Image 1 (cartoon, rainbow, N blue to C red):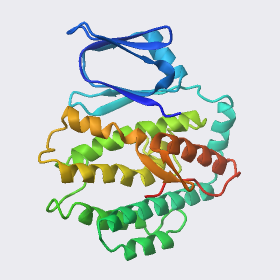
Image 2 (image 1 turned 30 degrees about the vertical axis):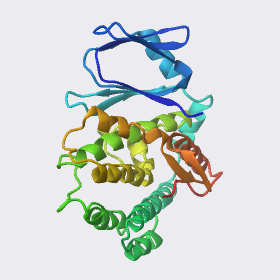
Image 3 (image 1 turned 90 degrees about the vertical axis):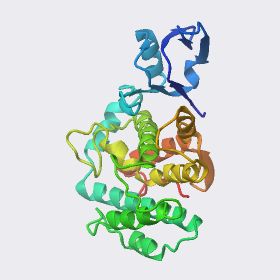
Length: 298
């Protein structure tokens, strides 16, 4: 079932009645409702939004992710269910017992899938990518030759070259990095939610190890999904005259990321469902029931 993403950008009080999320807007007196079971993510942007504890509890019980934004209106924090899987302790133990060799192979698969998706997006724009495909083929467990970074340097130099001069990818660089950052934050929340649903702990990654990062595993798993966000941002760059500011209209476009169609396992599926398939396969890799993670392809 495709879950809804609810975005609140105005002052509101959110509570629950009869398994419905109820949003009351004090400025207009308007009231809107949505079934809690249909909600996959709630994005809270305005500082004058309040939530009842009962609503929070019911959203988490239905494995919805609650995302809050900072003073710059960018996603900042996330609340997830800590008990979303019936055999969670067993899954956690299986994840934590993964060997270094297992983790290196998982990162190898991740880097290959990411590079191939980046190459596919460049090819869609008429660019040659033979070198990227060679890098993907030569990626060894753990990526000791750092082909991920080589591919990224090549990719970002070319992705926007028809529309922007001297684009530099960076969190604090100029537009369209603002759209990329926002889109990746939405993607990260989707992946983290799916990891919890698969009984995995988003904190402990198989490659990312930053001690200050609570979502290292989400950051690992989302890598091959990033070009899907890049594709959407590229479309926005082509169609918009001004994207220096993240307007509500642009955010609405980026909030479509969870329902974008992607190809996975030979079928077309909304990204949110594909993420569930990816994280489920990851657990089976940890449990040695599968050899490869199922990632989407462009």
